[in-house]
Image 1 (spheres, rainbow, N blue to C red):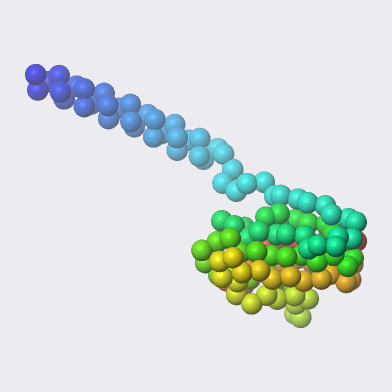
Image 2: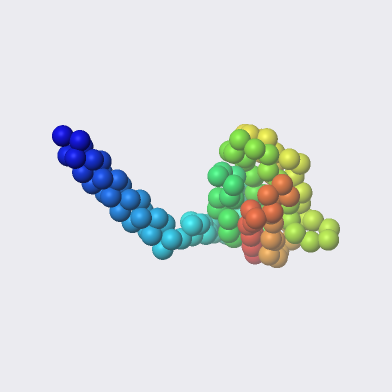
Length: 130
């Protein structure tokens, strides 16, 4: 009886190990980050275009808007984030946004604006204003 219990436990361990190994192999092949999200909003919008901050990412992280349009960032994470344009003199720089806080900026000049979170610099986004 003990031998059968040991064999069953050994088979269970082997099956678990194989399943775990296949899961790990699949994770090594699959990309770790989702593909970039892009949104184009070219007509001048009367209401701001929304960018959600969720799961340590700007969504969408690439955006094309018309001159005169506003972008509204809303933090859906449980930790503070910022929306800050890159450069010596940032075109925009939100304060630290707590959960459900928001920040809006009106883009009055055409160009490409790269931005990031000052708290988590790996979080980046791009807004193209045409």
